[in-house]
Length: 137
Ligand SMILES: [Zn+2]
Image (cartoon, rainbow, N blue to C red; front, side, top):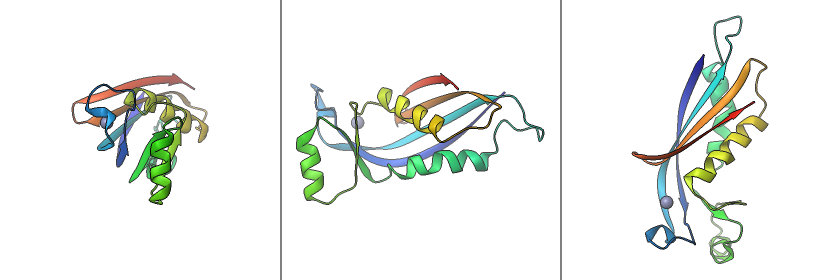
């Protein structure tokens, strides 16, 4: 059985390697869908939606109105420091694909009940573009 919940946040980023306009500092209204797969507990739930919010909410809140920056993008890190602006520095290029792995690891590390055996995330950069990845837990 599977359940899912959506989360939304605003965030800036850029792709320094990109030949086109994604090289520029810009932002998206991101959407994350998190799906949990598992057996039903004694109450007939995979995971209480309240608990989904407790697990995923802080991970998303940490990103909201920040700029996600690749750790090698020193110029952007310098600028954000000068502006005293919220930055989340990560060890990967900030593509939707890489963000899937970021969320899967954070969700897994938050600690999940025994009955959960899989997670899948969808990271939407726009309404019609997304990346998705799954993980067994
Ligand atoms: Zn972008």
